Length: 63
Length: 368
Image 1 (cartoon, helix red, strand yellow):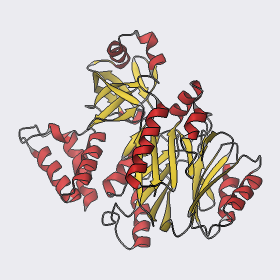
Image 2 (cartoon, one colour):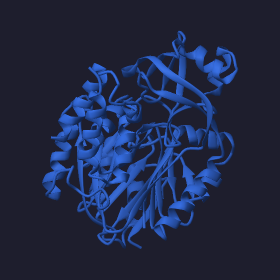
Image 3 (cartoon, rainbow over the protein chains, first blue to last red):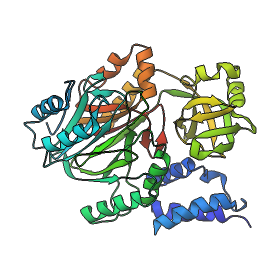
Image 4 (cartoon, each protein chain N blue to C red):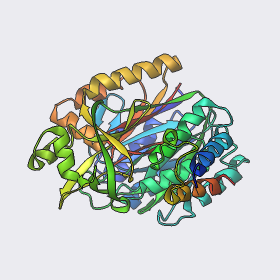
């Protein structure tokens, strides 16, 4: 499978930043500090379970 | 003035606190933040500071050196007081056990009760957080990571020090002293505020990718599938034996939109490199080269002043490695002088927080 990471990142940024470019930058920085470079992932990127696990934890905190 | 800073170098806790109380006597104090040398007994300093300002929110931590308006110091207490014209509201929460995964959530629940909205719903332009954390806990990454997951409000702060003894660091709130803990303060300033994150480094073209790490120990085992120390030395064109001498001048940084988030090497052991903050497998780190702290800080303050129009108070979290470099270059007087015109409080930290946990950086909270 591929593309799940990009989908999750896009969803997190959409929910948190709400089209605020400043907040979007901060969220991308937070992801970078977790070791997730949001700009590296595309719809073709492999579904790395370790990265997905980090993103799932973040999604949980959004609820 | 609605924000006032003061310091005391008195020998006893009682005398130092009494001096600070006198300096703030004309202010209807709503909040006091203070930073105290480790020469002062932790329990006594926290208790006496709270007793001196019983109606105020009072919090602080131990230091590796203090900063006041116009000077860098040691063996003192430096403090800043705010009245209601500068600060509309404030709430303090203590994460008493940094190993407790629910600690930040519980602190945030108390903020939500106090301010009547969840931490995800409060406006980041109207609220700001201060974090002071045990500087020997090794837990800052998890803490600031969790804070960042749960809110869009900026938390800025520093890791407590102990005058380079590396024995015990303390955070203070509610008249108590804590270890293995963090104090979180959520402020609703009545004035505009801004941030500075300044580090004095150029980003060099050489990069190192973390291919094997022990994240809990802040250890990089391999860069680019080579023993970390060898790869670092090769990138600098030096031998492994010379590498440790270059740590302060050439740390590494995670560069985001041209801005380095500095990771400072601490030591080499068995070919691995240990850092003062977290490194994660897959991170691409750039080699950095130090520049002039005085010039860069002056520039950062000038830009902040231009943005805010004026500055009525600065809280400065300045890395101890920067302080050591300033001492080496006999530049502490010049650094202090950068803050001579503005009420300033701060300390030399064992780590800085701004979005993440970082090293060799000064993070500052500025009020208009």
